[in-house]
Length: 328
Ligand code: NDP
Image (cartoon, rainbow, N blue to C red):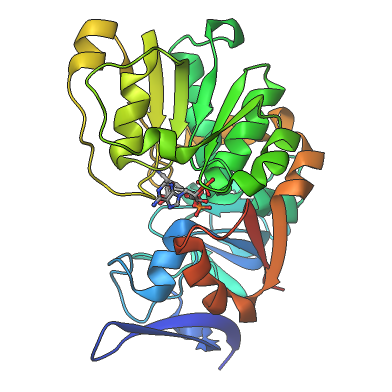
């Protein structure tokens, strides 16, 4: 029986275990396209799955990994042929469907996006779910009508994956980016990505007032909790915040004041079940609106055998930018 290398999560008496093993091809789940995975990435959610810190995995055994880029090996979906270069993010991979930390993946053809011509499979995963989510957040601000001359855009968790890509994309589009970070030592890194100003995240972590001094027209928030509440209370009249993460918590200790007194909007961002049409637009935008030299600055690389060891670091906020995982 054919086997391939994969990380396998199993249920244990207490919590879960994760190990790099050989996986039997016959155990792959249903799907009409089999992909030779070339690159994956380490996202915050992968950290949760690998460490078992949150119940991300809902099927055992599980291959974790929420995103990959690779080449189609076999397809019974007429939309895809062997040799096509593809990207897959979300759709429950690594949660309910066997995921990306494996040399092979089998998924539904509908889940795949064609790799934009301007990107390599490695660059696509250097962007990965975090960068794709950052683009969705930027697109939501644009749809709200925010233009570069509307005012500054604040990006929280700026030195993390979503934050780094959001900072680079927004600055390339001409927005003035205020990057909020807990790692002021990364101020030079954030300025290289295009941040005009770097602020200490402590400024945004105390309990929020219903309304505070108006500081920005919009924001991309990957932190949640009191940080998001502060962002809302400091948003200018008619502005909007794209909320995509919970690095500091899932709660939102806010009030309705920003919504009913300043017409501020809270825009929800989900990458997992995001419809196909928006995915295609977002990936095409990433291929054109992200400076690939900045992507090099953002990215570090590890092998599949290093993923389990790196997982606690991303949860502790110690990973800068994006981590690509070389699969094959
Ligand atoms: P990273 O760990 O790379 O980035 C998160 C960043 O948040 C950290 O680097 C740190 O930035 C900041 N941070 C961490 N802990 C805290 C804290 N306790 N208080 C304040 N800031 C903190 O993760 P990703 O960029 O991959 O993901 C970011 C968030 O977005 C996660 O919550 C993730 O689950 C979510 N997400 C959601 C998606 C969706 O579809 N909605 C898709 C992808 C991610 P710094 O050091 O600069 O302060």
